[in-house]
Length: 322
Image 1: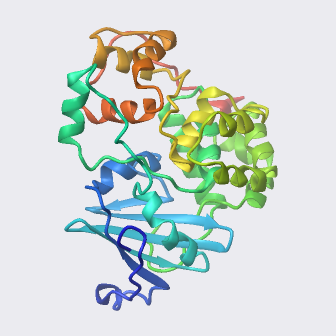
Image 2: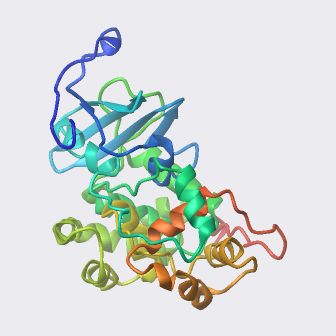
């Protein structure tokens, strides 16, 4: 693919492992840092649906045509993509947007803050991804509601390991394909409990899985925005933070800061004014970049700025004990 033009083939380096279903080369028209761009997809290093292998990413997906395994590797600015399984064609077709095609930074004026301009200069390969898979992003975000990363990632790993399916092709050992909407709906209450997911989050996950088809139709509305957020937030248990965390990944939303996050307001504050702020303060600082606020958030996270480690930490809750 060169700006959308595909070159199909079967790479010789895979022949000894397995016969790939489809393969292509995507040549982006912009610099691309594959790991930096796709880092929001992985829910920890033990995520069964994503596995980094040096410069290469293994990703499993559940498409409307079936499951697929996708392998991406950057070779001199060219993204070599190979996919296996019944959903391979959809997975391959989604590679350009997954790698940031359509993410236009040209209207972002960083003159109000030279620090951000310098981060962008030193991170030219950072793009906003778009998976075109709403249910995947939404379920993961629901599991992360009001708990620590440790708890959320443990639950994600448990549920995918038990209810996800074996990925097609030569995926690394231990990987799983995210469950289908039907599979999410049929997970019994005691298994959510064993995963450490409380009743409110598990009920929300089951409800969104029940309307999965309508969720995916929001992709036709573009790269997020008010209408998409409104549709997601109409679902019980899906608030501002959950909708934003979803559309950032599924739609490639450039203007969806995660309001209500435990850590982000302080991080934005330290990066832009040298002191912590609350949600209102974060929105005030991001206001000059309306339309690009998620791009600015990604730049801040790429900058290396960290908030001082002091003050109380969130307590890890063990819902399995109740």
